Amino acid sequence: MIRASTLEPVVDPAALRRTFACFPSGVAAVCAIAPQGPVGLLVSSFTSVSLEPPLASICIMNDSSRWSQLRSAARLGLSFLADGQQRVCEQLSASPEHGFAGLEISTTSEGAVLLRDATAWLDCSLHQEVDAGDHTLVLLRIEALRARPALAPLVFHNSQFHRLASL
Picture 1: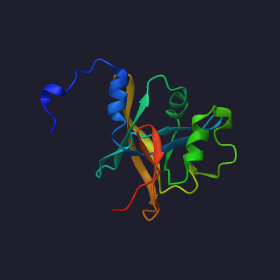
Picture 2: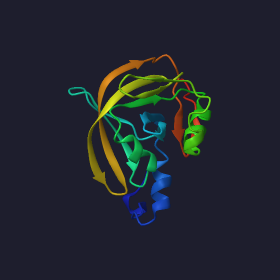
Picture 3: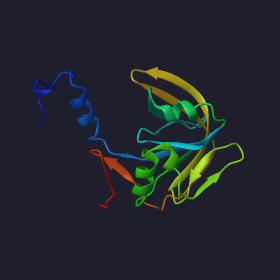
Picture 4: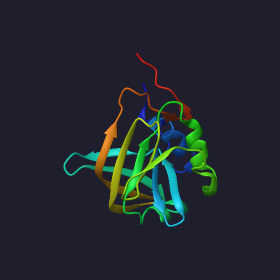
């Protein structure tokens, strides 16, 4: 049992980051066609928000140069990455000029970019942005979707990728 007296005040960002890393999450690629071509970034902060209207949220670092390119797109494609897509993560995290080299993508007529082999896809429009400290909370309106729930997701925990284990 933990005693309240053993909790530490939040004074160290590194301790806060380590604590946040204790909560596992899925990994989503947020991608669209920008004037210079496809642009994408990874988020592990996806959250469902509302069924009516259909809303979801992601959090983006305020200094993200890729978000500054994506935010003006008419549509954003979210691809929930599947187990085995770690290479996609490494590639999208690398320099932007190599981000989509060799990746199989589909593009909607509105410009959302979707990655092959994901567990699910969302075609979204920007609904609202909310200032949230050093991040921006982005609310997305889900316009279209497709899910493949039988595929195992890629899981991010303790700053590493993992597989789900069945109980």
